[in-house]
Amino acid sequence: MLANVVVMETMSALLAAGQTDGGGAADAVQVQSVWDFLIKGGPMIIPIAVCSLAALTVIVERMIVLRRVRVMPSGFVEGVRAAMSGGISSALEYCQANTSPIAEIFRAGLRRHHDSPERREKAIEEAGAREVFTLRKHLRLLAVVAAVAPILGLLGTIFGMIKAFQTVAISGDALGKTELLAKGIYEALITTAAGLLLAIPALIAFHWLSSRIDRMVFDMDRVTVDFFEETLFAPSPPSVSRSGDGSVSSGGNGRDASVSLAMR
Image (cartoon, rainbow, N blue to C red):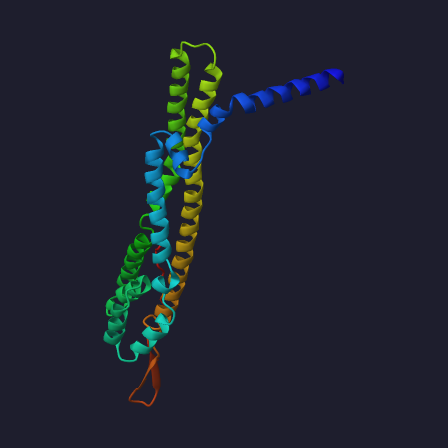
């Protein structure tokens, strides 16, 4: 017990001495602002900052583009059904006036209304693939930032560690080498922290935007399939003809076709 008391009193004395005599060293490594944090991180903070601006730009731009009102406007399908009463040309004009991705998919299918079901379905699939590619635009850049940012931070830390040990190695004064080494390591680790602070939100944003796109693609696929099965692909009613002997014969293809968007 007496030994523990002596050790605790000695540590208290050392801490007090460090607070009085080492105040200048503490002020030298203390971060006063965000700009001071960036300056202490070294030159590798510059590419990390550029990556952060790129990630922020992509996130804001995709959040604006991926709003449901721009991808699948409310009342669009009802408007197409109402325009179909005036013919295919009226429905095409309605889709052309709407610049949403779902309108482009519908327009591709309506333009092929005279073609075979296979060619019509292929046109819808190709239009869907193009629109999905547009929805996923710039997301690859966000994934690259999430993967590269920690590596840039680690590289900056390695450079900082090399510089810190080099400073200690070339210092002729034997006293204070530990302080110089600690300061160098402290500044070197700033880049690792900056890289992780960028990579974690970028990774979360990437998966959140990807899941949002997947939900919209599923909804567009469902709406498109339901619409074309109810309109263009609906089975035609049987035709009734009367033969010369008075018997009634019915005809009709009774075809039941379906369409699916290859969007994923």
